[in-house]
Length: 233
Image (cartoon, rainbow, N blue to C red; front, side, top):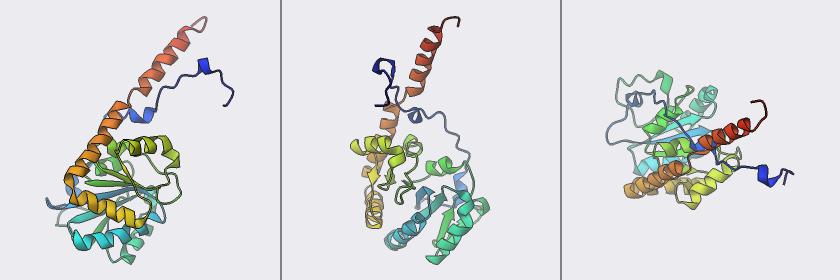
């Protein structure tokens, strides 16, 4: 549609699927979780989403007091702002950079990730992952990192920056899309109540990621062929 000649176009796939060895730098003890606790990791959130998440969490912990919450804003410099929001909903904010892990966590604590480059490590210890920028009209964020770690993934309806990936995952039942706070709460409870379903969802996500790898190598091969065909090179 842009006017290119079809025979000169090669579709190699999406290189985002070619995740390499992930660097997991975080010691899980820093979150002070006990064996019976589960972690809901809400990553890459944007303004407007934290309030939704905290309202949902407020309702869920009445029935599931062992569910802990971590909020990781897309912009860590919003940590002070998020602290105030957490307090507004009756919880005690704990910034991960200030958490020593020396004492047992209190049930009213909500963790706030306020450092850069560590979200993938927190995904690694999560039981359920919600990927933000998707309940508000931001366009969503990359769901392939939690997929690579075999986590059950939830996201909102506004995934237009990752449309193809989101549609692929939904078509293969490898993630769950939620449209409202009620749907978000229901999906979290469903996964908490059904560990087999959560594991199956996570397994399909990981399998789909592996199945779609290879775009980077295909790009390299086409580039090599193109360079060889250039006279004088």
